[in-house]
Amino acid sequence: MARRRGGMMKLGFIGVGAITEAVVTGLCEAGAPGLSILLSPRSRERSRALAERHAIVEAAASNQEVASRSELVFLAVRPQVAAEVLAALKFSQGQRVVSFIATLDSAEIARRIRPAALVARVAPVPPVAQRKGPIAMCPPNEQLAELFGPISTLIQVSDEAQLDAFFSVSAMMAPYFELLESVSSWLRAQGVEAAQADAYTGSLFSAIAVKSSQPAGEGFAELVAEHATRAGINEQMRRELLAAGFYDRIKAGLDLIQARMQGRATLNDTLETH
Image (cartoon, rainbow, N blue to C red):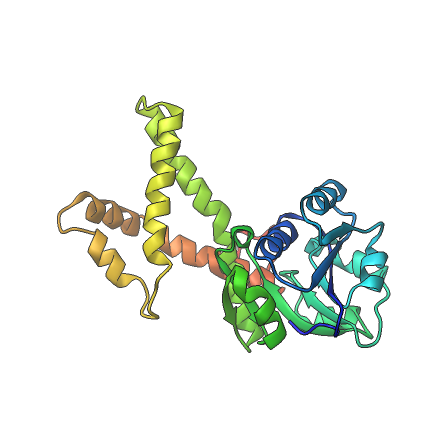
């Protein structure tokens, strides 16, 4: 990451939710050199906790302090309050901004941060705290790639619609854990102790995920075939879920989330109404 000669690159984060915490934790634990990190007071407890854990992290007194003292500012506020937060901030000429905000496109962000320049929109996910999982970014940027590469599988695209698609797929995290909860609760209903049910479910899905992290650009059909032994229980379960439209509903759900990303739907829209 390009830094001032003899100095530190000053990163500032406005909005300190789970995503900011994950990115900051990943950067700090990766030992990224030459960085100092300034966090906004929202959420104050999370900012203070990160500052206590990491010597290069400091909690600021206000959002404006972050904007004023940082060379590279990351916007990580909730979309619902983004307009209000940005309207209250003053950015400087030559200052650079990165947006984590899912539902505001580049043109909208660029308009709200003038005279600063938008470097990229970026889509991190919580596992980057453990230096795992993807970060999608548009447009490609060499300096950001150097920053985020050590903590993620970096996906860089030039088409903002593709970035919106990656943001949409990140909406599968909570449904994934709901799937695990359904499986574990079913085991508990069979009389399995809760700790064993959770341990088996977590271990099974974690082990399965190892293979999915090594795709060759040819999709996952081969893995489906490998695990759906003819006349076996995996084949039967897949057959029934296909017949019930389970996977079609997932794709329809992703279409709905993408429509929300692009302003064609809202939180109130459902698969039935969209």
